[in-house]
Length: 191
Image (tube, rainbow, N blue to C red; front, side, top):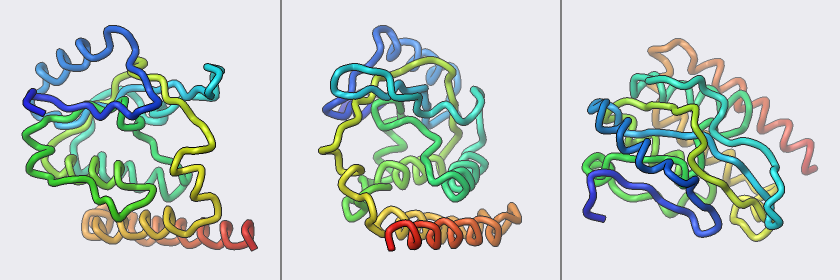
Protein backbone atom coordinates (compact mmCIF):
# COMPACT_ATOMS: atom_id res chain seq x y z
CA UNK A 1 0.00 0.00 0.00
CA UNK A 2 1.35 3.40 -0.93
CA UNK A 3 -1.43 5.76 0.19
CA UNK A 4 -1.55 7.86 3.32
CA UNK A 5 -4.32 5.76 4.86
CA UNK A 6 -5.14 2.04 4.95
CA UNK A 7 -8.35 0.06 5.06
CA UNK A 8 -8.46 -3.75 5.11
CA UNK A 9 -11.56 -4.78 3.19
CA UNK A 10 -12.44 -8.31 4.30
CA UNK A 11 -13.46 -10.66 1.49
CA UNK A 12 -17.15 -10.99 2.40
CA UNK A 13 -17.73 -7.33 3.28
CA UNK A 14 -18.51 -4.23 1.26
CA UNK A 15 -18.02 -0.53 1.80
CA UNK A 16 -20.97 1.84 1.89
CA UNK A 17 -20.98 4.19 -1.10
CA UNK A 18 -19.16 7.45 -0.32
CA UNK A 19 -17.92 6.41 3.11
CA UNK A 20 -14.22 6.32 2.32
CA UNK A 21 -14.10 9.92 1.08
CA UNK A 22 -15.77 11.18 4.28
CA UNK A 23 -13.44 9.09 6.44
CA UNK A 24 -10.32 10.41 4.69
CA UNK A 25 -11.56 14.00 5.13
CA UNK A 26 -11.99 13.39 8.88
CA UNK A 27 -8.53 11.81 9.17
CA UNK A 28 -7.01 14.79 7.33
CA UNK A 29 -8.77 17.21 9.70
CA UNK A 30 -7.40 15.50 12.84
CA UNK A 31 -3.68 14.76 12.49
CA UNK A 32 -3.45 13.15 15.97
CA UNK A 33 -6.04 10.52 15.01
CA UNK A 34 -4.40 7.28 13.86
CA UNK A 35 -7.47 5.04 13.80
CA UNK A 36 -11.02 5.78 12.69
CA UNK A 37 -13.89 3.41 13.42
CA UNK A 38 -17.27 3.65 11.71
CA UNK A 39 -20.45 1.71 12.38
CA UNK A 40 -20.99 -1.59 10.59
CA UNK A 41 -24.13 -3.39 9.56
CA UNK A 42 -23.96 -7.17 10.04
CA UNK A 43 -25.90 -9.16 7.45
CA UNK A 44 -26.34 -12.83 6.61
CA UNK A 45 -25.62 -14.45 3.24
CA UNK A 46 -29.12 -13.51 2.02
CA UNK A 47 -28.55 -9.85 2.94
CA UNK A 48 -30.85 -9.92 5.99
CA UNK A 49 -29.98 -7.49 8.77
CA UNK A 50 -28.48 -9.19 11.85
CA UNK A 51 -27.41 -6.21 13.94
CA UNK A 52 -24.91 -3.42 14.21
CA UNK A 53 -21.18 -3.49 14.87
CA UNK A 54 -19.00 -0.75 16.31
CA UNK A 55 -21.95 1.13 17.81
CA UNK A 56 -21.09 0.82 21.51
CA UNK A 57 -18.91 3.92 21.86
CA UNK A 58 -20.34 7.38 21.39
CA UNK A 59 -19.02 9.25 18.39
CA UNK A 60 -16.08 11.51 19.11
CA UNK A 61 -12.34 11.53 19.71
CA UNK A 62 -10.72 9.34 22.35
CA UNK A 63 -7.08 9.76 23.42
CA UNK A 64 -5.08 6.69 22.42
CA UNK A 65 -4.42 5.25 25.88
CA UNK A 66 -7.98 5.99 26.99
CA UNK A 67 -9.23 4.18 23.90
CA UNK A 68 -7.03 1.15 24.64
CA UNK A 69 -8.40 1.08 28.17
CA UNK A 70 -12.00 1.46 26.98
CA UNK A 71 -11.69 -1.36 24.42
CA UNK A 72 -10.20 -3.77 26.97
CA UNK A 73 -12.72 -2.80 29.65
CA UNK A 74 -15.61 -3.31 27.22
CA UNK A 75 -14.32 -6.67 26.01
CA UNK A 76 -13.78 -7.93 29.55
CA UNK A 77 -17.30 -6.94 30.59
CA UNK A 78 -19.27 -7.80 27.47
CA UNK A 79 -17.04 -10.35 25.66
CA UNK A 80 -17.44 -8.30 22.50
CA UNK A 81 -15.17 -6.07 20.42
CA UNK A 82 -16.60 -2.52 20.54
CA UNK A 83 -14.74 -1.40 17.40
CA UNK A 84 -15.90 -2.13 13.89
CA UNK A 85 -14.59 -5.07 11.89
CA UNK A 86 -11.45 -4.25 9.82
CA UNK A 87 -13.63 -3.26 6.83
CA UNK A 88 -14.95 -0.34 8.90
CA UNK A 89 -11.58 0.87 10.24
CA UNK A 90 -9.33 3.43 8.56
CA UNK A 91 -5.68 3.63 9.68
CA UNK A 92 -2.72 5.88 9.09
CA UNK A 93 -0.29 3.92 6.89
CA UNK A 94 2.80 5.46 8.48
CA UNK A 95 1.67 4.32 11.95
CA UNK A 96 0.69 0.86 10.69
CA UNK A 97 4.23 0.44 9.35
CA UNK A 98 5.69 1.40 12.76
CA UNK A 99 3.30 -0.96 14.51
CA UNK A 100 4.29 -4.01 12.53
CA UNK A 101 2.11 -6.73 11.14
CA UNK A 102 -0.95 -8.57 12.37
CA UNK A 103 -0.05 -11.27 14.89
CA UNK A 104 -0.96 -14.33 12.83
CA UNK A 105 -0.68 -16.62 15.86
CA UNK A 106 -3.91 -15.07 17.15
CA UNK A 107 -6.95 -16.92 15.90
CA UNK A 108 -9.61 -14.40 16.95
CA UNK A 109 -8.10 -11.18 18.26
CA UNK A 110 -5.43 -10.38 15.68
CA UNK A 111 -7.33 -7.33 14.46
CA UNK A 112 -8.00 -5.96 17.96
CA UNK A 113 -4.37 -6.56 18.91
CA UNK A 114 -3.20 -4.65 15.82
CA UNK A 115 -5.63 -1.78 16.44
CA UNK A 116 -4.56 -1.43 20.09
CA UNK A 117 -0.89 -1.30 19.06
CA UNK A 118 -1.77 1.45 16.57
CA UNK A 119 -3.54 3.42 19.32
CA UNK A 120 -0.23 3.54 21.22
CA UNK A 121 0.78 6.16 18.61
CA UNK A 122 -2.27 8.40 18.60
CA UNK A 123 -5.98 8.86 19.03
CA UNK A 124 -9.18 7.09 18.01
CA UNK A 125 -12.11 8.76 16.35
CA UNK A 126 -15.47 7.01 16.34
CA UNK A 127 -17.84 8.13 13.62
CA UNK A 128 -21.60 7.78 13.90
CA UNK A 129 -21.89 6.88 10.21
CA UNK A 130 -22.24 3.54 8.48
CA UNK A 131 -18.97 2.49 6.87
CA UNK A 132 -19.50 -1.10 5.79
CA UNK A 133 -21.69 -4.16 5.57
CA UNK A 134 -20.22 -7.23 7.24
CA UNK A 135 -21.36 -10.63 6.07
CA UNK A 136 -21.71 -13.20 8.84
CA UNK A 137 -21.72 -16.90 7.95
CA UNK A 138 -20.83 -20.28 9.43
CA UNK A 139 -17.55 -20.69 7.51
CA UNK A 140 -15.88 -17.70 9.19
CA UNK A 141 -12.95 -18.37 11.52
CA UNK A 142 -14.84 -16.89 14.48
CA UNK A 143 -17.73 -19.31 13.97
CA UNK A 144 -15.26 -22.21 14.08
CA UNK A 145 -14.01 -21.14 17.53
CA UNK A 146 -17.20 -21.88 19.49
CA UNK A 147 -16.10 -23.60 22.67
CA UNK A 148 -12.40 -22.98 21.94
CA UNK A 149 -10.24 -21.31 24.59
CA UNK A 150 -8.27 -19.23 22.04
CA UNK A 151 -10.42 -16.07 22.24
CA UNK A 152 -10.25 -16.02 26.06
CA UNK A 153 -6.50 -16.67 26.14
CA UNK A 154 -5.90 -13.93 23.57
CA UNK A 155 -7.97 -11.44 25.56
CA UNK A 156 -6.00 -12.33 28.70
CA UNK A 157 -2.77 -11.73 26.75
CA UNK A 158 -3.98 -8.30 25.62
CA UNK A 159 -4.95 -7.34 29.16
CA UNK A 160 -1.52 -8.41 30.42
CA UNK A 161 0.25 -6.44 27.67
CA UNK A 162 -1.54 -3.29 28.85
CA UNK A 163 -1.45 -4.14 32.54
CA UNK A 164 0.49 -1.00 33.51
CA UNK A 165 -1.98 1.24 31.69
CA UNK A 166 -4.92 -0.54 33.35
CA UNK A 167 -3.27 -0.35 36.77
CA UNK A 168 -2.75 3.41 36.32
CA UNK A 169 -6.46 3.71 35.60
CA UNK A 170 -7.22 1.61 38.69
CA UNK A 171 -9.20 -0.95 36.70
CA UNK A 172 -6.79 -3.86 36.30
CA UNK A 173 -8.18 -5.89 39.26
CA UNK A 174 -11.77 -5.36 38.08
CA UNK A 175 -10.95 -6.35 34.50
CA UNK A 176 -9.11 -9.48 35.65
CA UNK A 177 -12.03 -10.37 37.93
CA UNK A 178 -14.48 -9.92 35.08
CA UNK A 179 -12.36 -12.06 32.74
CA UNK A 180 -12.19 -14.80 35.35
CA UNK A 181 -15.99 -14.72 35.71
CA UNK A 182 -16.39 -14.85 31.94
CA UNK A 183 -13.97 -17.80 31.68
CA UNK A 184 -15.83 -19.64 34.44
CA UNK A 185 -19.14 -19.04 32.70
CA UNK A 186 -17.75 -20.40 29.43
CA UNK A 187 -16.39 -23.41 31.28
CA UNK A 188 -19.83 -24.23 32.65
CA UNK A 189 -21.46 -23.58 29.31
CA UNK A 190 -19.24 -26.00 27.40
CA UNK A 191 -18.96 -28.56 30.18
